[in-house]
Figure 1 (tube, rainbow, N blue to C red):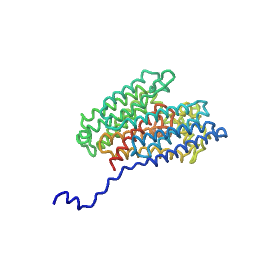
Figure 2: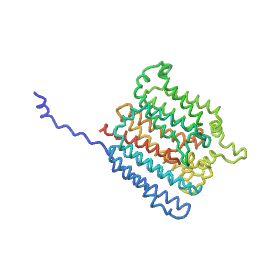
Figure 3: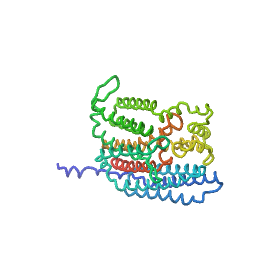
Figure 4: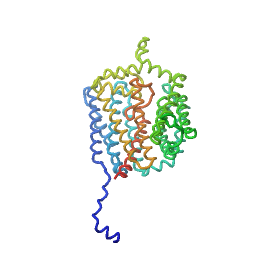
Length: 446
């Protein structure tokens, strides 16, 4: 009997289900994000001035226009992407603008309008990445170009004056840029490409001691190089946060690529040794370690509360449900209240419930990135998605841990919430790449 006869007698095969899109859900969630942001903006005006801010309509229209533009780009360029990534990012960005506007009213500055401009630039780059980057695998061809560019971006700020003790800024003609924010995305591309090409050698070679599979000397070379670069950044730029982020990202991707606990042990030992040595010898980092160990030492010495102590007071004053937007006193923290310590304002005015909601949003954003990575079929895409999501998770942990005295302060920016044009632009690029990766993953699942 011929194959044609067999096929004719067989039941018809079910059609392949179309990929899940979820664009309608995304649109509804974007509307909710814009509405929550506008209501929070009104609440700040009512609490501080007793009236709705006169520019509420303009603020709402600007945020809504950004949401519609980004949504249209996803519909056109990545119709099967995860429907939660964009609404969560927009909501966090909107909440950050509310907190900055609330602090502007007490400091007579204009950080919120500037942040809105940077957010618009970030959304524009988001649209460009979603529409122009049709195949994320093209990034793997530029792995070594990416790491070279990242090294240049990290080295250039050394030639510029230190800002608040750290050399991480490029300042010229009234503008300031933090190149390390862009370097982290480039390093994620390089790490993903390098480990995708070498994960077999890293996973199946080495010597086993007790329950650890230790790497060979040849395989350990790149790890030592990354460790040396991280410590070099820490010493030359006095930037503990960037050093922890870079090395933590590499260790996470090593473990995901190889599944070997030995890599994690080596990474933790190297990072711990480097942090201890620099924290003991470098004055700026050492002072932060001392503030972490003794946050109320300045009060005992009669010098008044330090920034970290004021941050802890702000969290304590917030209680469970907070004092309400515009009703707190976190402005007493000082010069870094809009950047390093913006989470303290959220803790005081939104309370434990508000902080928990914010951290859940970050957890959902990270989880959706991990979900996209686990669904990818090629190693590079899997590692890139997990690496980008890990950047957000590491930043949140390092910043939240610093302002709550869990770990030493690092001086990094809370994703989307804190003041910083370089940070918000980079975070929108990360969301765009996750959108592209999740679109590919959901198509593959279907």
